[in-house]
Length: 123
Image (cartoon, rainbow, N blue to C red; front, side, top):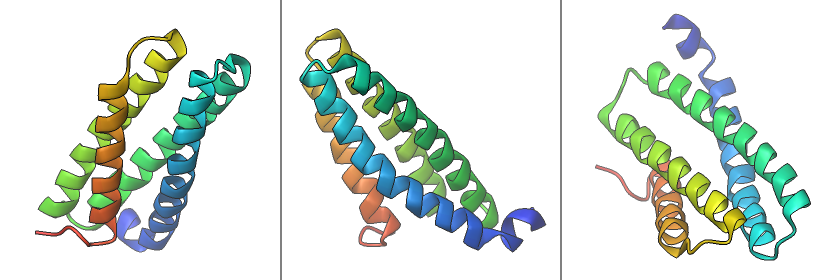
């Protein structure tokens, strides 16, 4: 526990950077799959998955560092659901299936989580 509190700046920097890249990589990957550029999209998808892991790991470290404050726990749960919907939308785009529900839901949750991160949405 003390490790996380002592290194909160490292976790915060990792988390903010991974969110910025995650936002860009998701939309690039999704639209590459839509345009059927599968080879490049697959490479981008693997990089996107790496940033999912970095974002979730650093977010869990921040939740632990902030002593499991309810706001951050709820933000983390929403972020996990968002990652699942983003992954579903990319996979369905790769297969050429209808994926607008997952895409719009994942994008909406992405906006909600980012607004929670900037404390525009708080409770």
